[in-house]
Length: 266
Length: 202
Image (cartoon, rainbow over all chains, first blue to last red; front, side, top):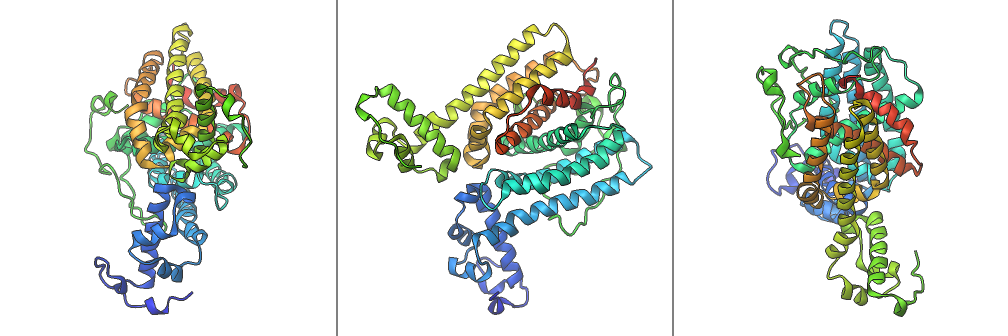
C-alpha cells in the first residue's frame, strides 16, 4: 500500500490538518467517515466520494489508502461486527465461569452486557443487515447467528437448566437478539435514551427461557440494582469506547421509582 | 427489469395510480429512498417520467403513497387486531400472549421489507415516521398489552415489555423474509411465548 508519504509522527488532531495525521490516524478517520456514510445512506447508497468529503480529503487521496469500496466496507462494517461477537463472547464466558453469583445476577448481567454491546453495534448491524452487497446476509446467517447461539447456549441455557431442541435454541437466540436490537433501534428512532441497568433488570423479570418450573417467575425476587456487582471496567482492545446514554452507575433507587410507565415515550 | 409494453390509454387514473404505486414500492424496496430513481419507477410502470410527474408531484409523494401509507395502515390494522384479540381471550393470559405473538409475527414477516425501508435504511426519515406516525399506534398496543397481561410482579414496565416483544418478533419475521422462507407461525409463537411466559401467571 502506498502510504509512505503519510507515515509521520502522530500529532494532535487539528481541524483539516491533513498533513498532520499519521497514516494510521488517517485510516481510522476515513473508516469513521465511512461508517457515518453507510449508516446514513446504506451500503449501496453510500458513495466513496461522500466518504472522502466527510473525511475532508479528496477521493484520489482516499484511494491511496484503500483499494475499493469493498475494502472500506470490510473495515468499517464487517470488522466491527466480528469484534462485537468476539468481545461479547469473551465477556459472557467470564460471566458464566463465576460460580459465586446467583442465576438472577447472571441473567441480569447477561442482559446488561448484551444490550450494551448491541446498542453500540445497532447502527452498523442494521446497515449490514439491510444491505444486499458484500455477502452481508450470509455473514448474518453463517457467522453472527451461530456465534450468538453458542453464547446464548453457554449462559442463558446453563443458568436456566433448560434443554432446548435446536429449533427452540434458534428461536430463542433470534428472539433475544431481536429483543436487544429492537430496544436499541427504537431508542435510536425515538431519540429516547436507554437506561441500560433498568431495562436489563426488566428483561430478567420478563424473559423466562423455559424455566423448569413454569409456575415460578424466572427471577423473582430480582436483585435490586444496587446489589449488582459493580460494572467491570471494560478494557477489551476490540471494543471502542462506548458512549453511554445513561450514567453507568445509577444511585440506589427504590423499586417504586424504578418502574416508570413512560407512556409519553411510546 | 425491462419495461413492459403497456396499454397506456386503457387504464383509468385510479388504475394508473395503483400501478405506479406498485412499481414505486418495488423500486423503493430494492433501493431505499435515496437510491430510488423516479426514472426507474416510470420504466417499471411502463410510462414516461413526465407522465409519472403528472400524477405524483415528487419522489417524496410517491414514497408517501407507496411505502409510508401502507406501513402506517399495517400498524393500524395490527393494533385493531390486537384489540379484537383482547376482547375475546376470556382472561386466559397465556392464550392472549400466544395470540399476540402470532399476530405480531405474521405482521413482522408480511411487512418486513417495507418496515425496513421506512425505519432502518435512513435514520432521518425513519425518525420522523417513527415519532410522528407510529409512536401513537405503538402506545395503543402497549396499553392493550398492559391491560391484558396483568403481571404478578408490579415492577414490570409495559414499555419494556412491548419493545422486547416487538424486537423478538421483528427479528424472527425479518430473518424469514431475508431467507425467503415462510415461518411456521404457530410453532414459533409457542417458542416465543415460552421465552416470555415466566412473567405471566399460569
